[in-house]
Image: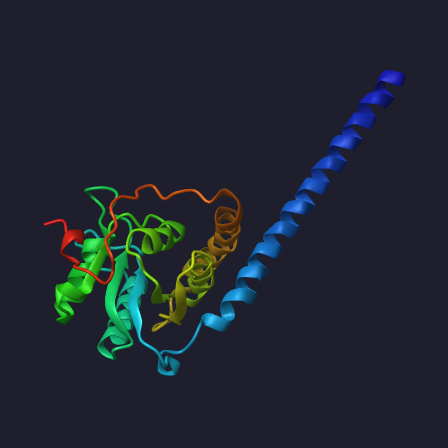
Length: 231
């Protein structure tokens, strides 16, 4: 009888611990999201309200098709970034994305799209190791020595991007790239993923502070872009 009571008591304690841990995780998830949203909203602006010049626009990568053509979401990011450059809000473009495999290359797809518009490649920098938002911002700061920038991505992604960059010491503002309406089912998945990604990157920025997959020699955004091309 006493053994059954002890077993039940242990199970109750374990269940209570589980509940406490679960509630703490939920609380931290909400805290991280609210912190990022409240911090970043003041730095997200309309293109027409920009009243300064920035070193670059950081255009974050997204999916490309097998032929290298950017997906609609990425095309919108590129179009907004090009507009910022053509309107002289920024001096250069920094295209950052995933080029970690020979058979998948976001960055050169982005580059080709921009060059086809007619922008001279001397103004276009490539970051082939932007495997995540965190890594893109880390490398923008450490490798490309970016001090001021406008980040271009969709609204759901902009809060986290601006937060990470600002916490890394870059003077950034965010401009939305929501030119078209995206499929509702796709947006629901992305928003759920983003909710969790904010927690991960909050931990990265404030606690773990990991280095990106690749670092390397510094390539100042104020210098030559030629070294960033893989001819």
